[in-house]
Amino acid sequence: MAAVGAAERVRRGTVAGVRRKGSDTRAEIQEVALELFTANGYDATSLREIAERLGITKAALYYHYDSKEAIIHGVFEQRVADFDALIEWAEAQPRTPELPAEIFQRWFDLNTTSGLRMIRFAVANHNAMRDHAPDKGGAMQRIQRIVALIGGPDVTMPEQMRITMAMLSINIAVMAGQGLAADDDAIIAAAKEAATSLLRDLLPGYLHH
Amino acid sequence: MAAVGAAERVRRGTVAGVRRKGSDTRAEIQEVALELFTANGYDATSLREIAERLGITKAALYYHYDSKEAIIHGVFEQRVADFDALIEWAEAQPRTPELPAEIFQRWFDLNTTSGLRMIRFAVANHNAMRDHAPDKGGAMQRIQRIVALIGGPDVTMPEQMRITMAMLSINIAVMAGQGLAADDDAIIAAAKEAATSLLRDLLPGYLHH
DNA sequence: GTCTATACCCCGATAGAC
DNA sequence: GTCTATCGGGGTATAGAC
Image (cartoon, rainbow over all chains, first blue to last red; front, side):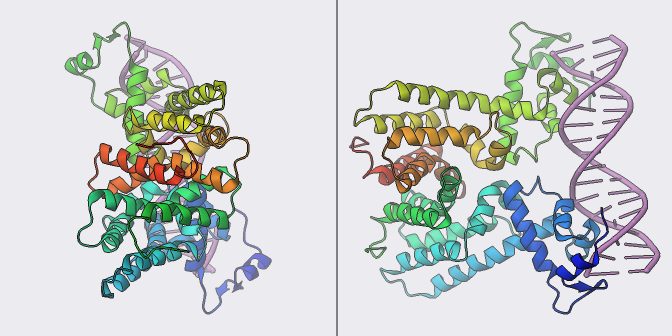
């Protein structure tokens, strides 16, 4: 591996090998890892690749994270925290007839307003999300919790399926968009349309525009 | 690795090391590979695991297949052949108003009547299907071809998205069913329902039951 | 905080006996 | 058709200098 030149160090925010105050190497690792895990999958991505992309060595990675699994945990944490915030919010609301639609809308925004990066990651790492989730069950378990909150106390199993599929409509839209020449806006629009038709008869307050 | 005992050989259809006529080792390898690739993913599944499950060694695997990739190609071939048969059939039909619905129905049956094994494999091996498809583009390219046949010559991009998502409704139904306690019939029913609502306005002849 | 160097393991794949 | 044995390589992870 070639030595890191001075110009490269400056680009990465180091001077003479001393990292600037407010260093964000961990965040950079997260970003690169998310990108590579999404493009090639968790198993097919090596620590060497991640390090190379950052202009550091594998060993340096281990200063910031204890293991490869710890790196993907970092990716999950961000997302799981968003899920938990939504769950907490929803549980604190009075159960009005409009609440289910409101919860779904927030779920949808959560997954689209800051781009589709996390969805693309989820699509490409289906197995890794099951095997390396920080806590047992992880993301899917939280999705089920949200489904329950949307569905309410008397929700039937077919209804739960429909709600879950509506929540995953962004995922299939991303999959579908891969083959077509669809940009993010078209993907999001298609996902919203699909979710609408799935929830049409279920959520009275959802999307009458 | 322990030597294979006589009883084990008999179970696998060999006597004194000589394979019976009509041996189906290749088929057994396919079956085990499909199972393990689905459970753990292509990358996370080693040839040692596959061999161990079959009671043979890695080296024996190489008598039947040239490489690990050749094994997954075998899984694809079966599925791709089904796709091609559907495409060929559809292209030979006169374009009546009912044809799109008929094509979709056949697609749906193709993916459900012999169980959900191939869908589960596809869900768990999203990346591998892209990277190790026998021909470039592989499955997704054929799906696009079928979308075009369903949509007809004047199909718009949003319509293509809807049709593609309808075709992938079985995939999200399987994903959704993982968290819920849904059996295959419930998953298939949910997928059909979702596809129906997605195609409602698009396919005049589809499913007025 | 990052480096070089290395340990250790398992992977896919091959050679050659039986 | 299956075996034992082995090869080369890349994987994660660690030790210790700077």
